[in-house]
View 1 (cartoon, rainbow over the protein chains, first blue to last red):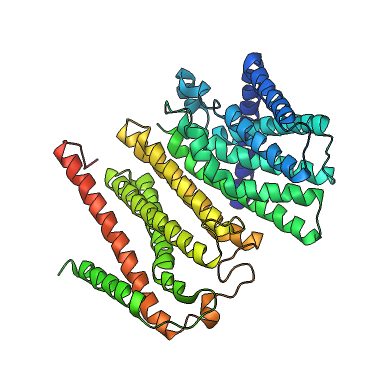
View 2 (view 1 turned 90 degrees about the vertical axis):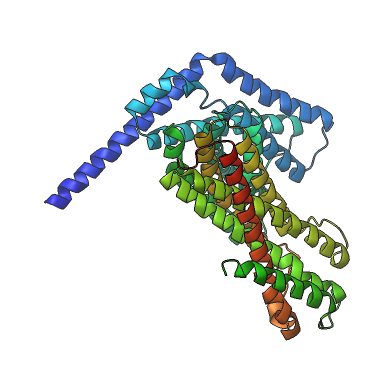
Length: 233
Length: 225
């Protein structure tokens, strides 16, 4: 009987945590929605950069260059979008939040919210690159899957790093810390995008999907383990 | 004799340099005399990886115990590792020029991975510089260094194996040194060289720790925290 009660306790606790995370994600979205200028500026940034690339390349582009530009643009957008994710909480709200919820809930909710935001931004980039260059990835579904996995990976890494850099006055620090660390993931994603356009062997696709998922798993575990040390202040 | 390993280090390095340049080597195509770089280039990377690993251990210890002493050590070992990483890149670049024909080869994932790994640790030093508060600096740097080490290992050990495009021996379908040409003449110098360079890097790290501690004592910074 004791085991059953333990299991029910554990289930209840998990549901409680999930509910908290859901509420926190909702709070993030509400806060973002309230400041439409901040949200709008990041979308205009994306569209503007797409247009800039289109004009400077004069409409001439091949698929590998397209993919490389797509992910570099996604990376820069991520840095801009994520950099302020902990700045909001640097005031009195921080103490209130710390009193209410555990650090694991905070980091998971931020990661989920950032992943949603980055996926949305990446889709906007995809739409505009398609509009301007008329080059489409062969296997759409697989590329969408790559976008989602890549966004989750970007979000895992940059959310934790932005929590570190939010305490400093150094604004380029997030890019300095993030770019070399994101490189393994970025290389795999670019390879995966190339594969979703044209793959000789099915085996390669599974191997790269597996590697990206594994990397995402490692980064999310590291984030969960390490974030409490940053949050305690 | 507390300092026996320092004497050993000097003796081993003299042995490495003298026999490395004058000792007998097997006759190899393309590599020719450049195989002597094996005594310098490869041990540099071993030393770097060991230093980074020790730095990681001290970072984890700092997060657990919150003693500033561990942070000083983590920083010093990362610095020594960075130095040896730079030396590894320079010696590797010289070797690449004579065997692959260029100072920097794009097809070589290990090379790019190593360069990115050095950038990761350069960012670590920048991060340390951007905090004023001692305790915060130590804590955040420790968190970043754990993250950095994991990604660094993925960069130089996992990616080259997946991507399958490497010119290094033992990668991408190239035969490893062990299989046919690391003969006994090379081994006789190579193993002492590894030990010698590792000891030298440890020595540099301990010196850095002592300098930092003297600096703190002189300026009255608290060490017991």
